[in-house]
Length: 281
Image 1 (tube, rainbow, N blue to C red):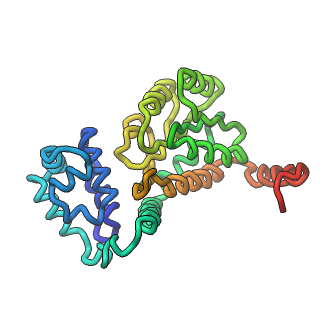
Image 2: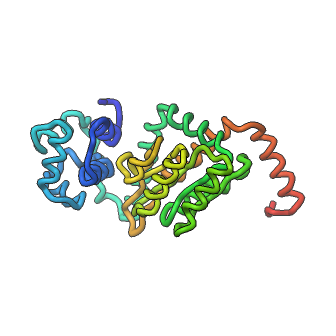
């Protein structure tokens, strides 16, 4: 693990452990502050995650350590010297820190994509689904709409589900009856309960669920067949989602590899756009 980033090492440490919701919250907070975690006390980590100090101790034991001090020693041993930038965050104003935080999220995503297997599998699942439902509510609705906009240029039947309510299950039913085999979900904090319920229902109806979420420990993990994480930025009043957006485009690219006549569809759209005068040249 020595050649990977602090966040990647933490993700590997958590893999294979059945964590409670509180423990997933601690894990998520640790990943978000991966460079600082080896130097935090149990009280500081508890405050960061919004949990009690005993919860942090139980979390360390759940990972196989005698307690939090043992976990922290382990993290310090595997953290390369100089991994924390000289000068710290104090060298930048809050706006710069937000941008630098997103750059770090994109670095983590790049490391995740070193193994293209999950992306390629997701691309095949999405390309094969006719129609293709795209779910995203509240904070994730813009991600779903953006994915759906571009996917519709190459996929014959894309159905964006960006509004909740009593009709959501009906629309999932309609997609399944029309032949859908998979659903892609964008799930960002704060996670609506309705999204978790909808994904559980989609799986009950036989759909394979592919999720893009802010963490491998997000609430949608329990009702996803394939989850690919991309962290959100938390440095501003409202979360930023550069990495989830880019991951959506990567999935579109992988989906195109599984669709026939993609180039012909794109050229046909361009021809019609010129004829209709859609864009200012």
